[in-house]
Length: 248
Image 1 (cartoon, one colour):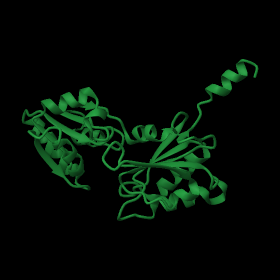
Image 2 (cartoon, rainbow, N blue to C red):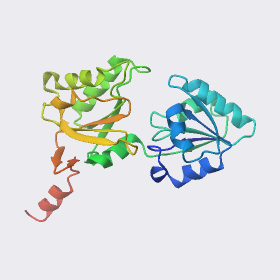
Image 3 (cartoon, one colour):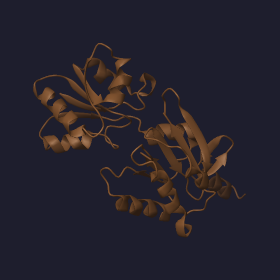
Image 4 (cartoon, rainbow, N blue to C red):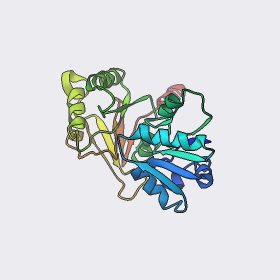
């Protein structure tokens, strides 16, 4: 049986019991090198098969082949198995003919939001700034559509060594022609749930200069998002609704 599992940030305390049980029972754990190393500390006795970034297809094929031989294999993804994870690729490779078990995990949008406070309490959109698989023109259209809809925007893969300017480009795009104001409340969390975790709340104007990397998740607030003390909050509207109902 092949299981595709989201491990959340990678720690045992943020992993679902279902995923932890699957890992404990597995003959082999397959994953991106960085994520596999996080699991070695928890499951040192397991066999591991790892590949670096850009070798996702090879990694999935190996996992499928081992499962077909009767082994219990868990293919791991950080966060959730289906949100920018490998569940979709495995379904494509097997053409829906292989028995799969797909287990969810806590994706970075949610775990990072909890660190900042409550930025996702109203409608939000998630966009990856990586143009390795998606053309920048498509990313641009999605960012502008989310801005036009006044969504909170959560950005995955905001920058890397190969594309250090992508976050700055996205901020400039949103600031052009008044799509958003420079004072829009934003936040960023790096190394969510891991050693070295750090978070910061800032304005959109300041976000353009934030030193983001592949382990950073960025939040651009909607027009109603505000900073309340140490927290970034997007009100759902409960308070206004209740005060209106009471005649205040």
